[in-house]
Length: 474
Image 1 (cartoon, rainbow, N blue to C red):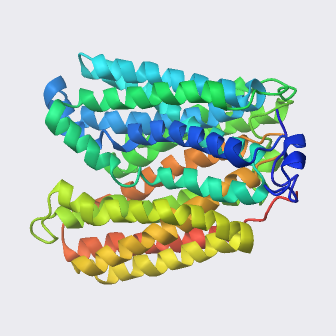
Image 2 (image 1 turned 120 degrees about the vertical axis):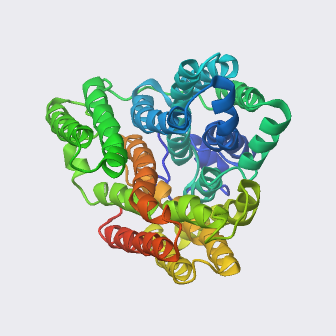
Image 3 (image 1 turned 30 degrees about the horizontal axis):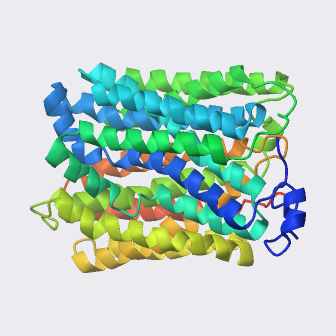
């Protein structure tokens, strides 16, 4: 693949464009165009992730689906994203970034068309699985930025891309609800289709041509066994909390997780170009990054996107808001603040250090969570604390864990850790909600407090995990 990572070229900046071009780095308008194109690509994913949420009830009515069935519209999308994010990002090491990103967007487009014309729920779910491939756009975008931009520009651009991960300025869900009310849920997929096609065209013409691919072959057996492990561990958590940890379904997924994880380890030991070498996976440059991501998402994501939402919409012990009011007060402000904070977080991490910025973000997030847990029924106190999380979590934490996922990835597998980190996002988010849901669902002051203090404790563990991270020696 083309070289020119910021770690390998720390002295290059926009002030020295000739040297930058020799190293394969972009500057000025070319760099801005590259970032804009990658931004369009990740927006195609984020709209799929959040824009359809308000339309789920209408989908259930129009397609005559059950509540459990329509819930799979989101769960299958994120599960497919976790798996394809790992596989396709690593495949880009061998087949090229531009080629794989175009494939990702084309597969996403096919899935969107299926969703747009779906006559029933099974066809819609098939389309959602194909749309899940768009998750790889984030990981590939991060690696492209690292390879094509100078160290300083990379940090800021990474923050810009990461900001979209918290929602497209907080308006995507609101726009989805408006479209669904006015024109039906299919209009949402029509908008996503236009964005996806535009992103594919821009990537094909804007991204630099792929250089010589890395030597070796894609580790398909490793990808298969890891995919099975991710599938099993995802459903292990959901079935464990829903059916009980001693149920047959839970024990079956536990066995599947263990067997597939062991098989993955055996495969990786024998491959010349593994999905990720076990020596790297065991190093403090890799496993603590993944652990921090999983645990941080489990702690903080569940508060913002579940517990606070439940409190805000509870008519008895809560704020009694409808979905739109809850989104406007507790989701949109944090997303908008994160949109501004993430690029600044990247710049701060470049100047002060990625690890110290991550740990400061986690400490400040813990403070905000403690405030929410102490005053869960004080509406404006909760509002202020969640808005503050827009800076500390959406800005500092998400930007730095994504950055470390790129910067700490092994040199012989630059897209491996970003792919694994993307799976960690999905697993962490679902795990956190699964842990606190039984307590928050009680809709009592004690239940809310228990759920929130559990999230505080989990986030403290994320801070502890971050202390084990070491930076890769460039």
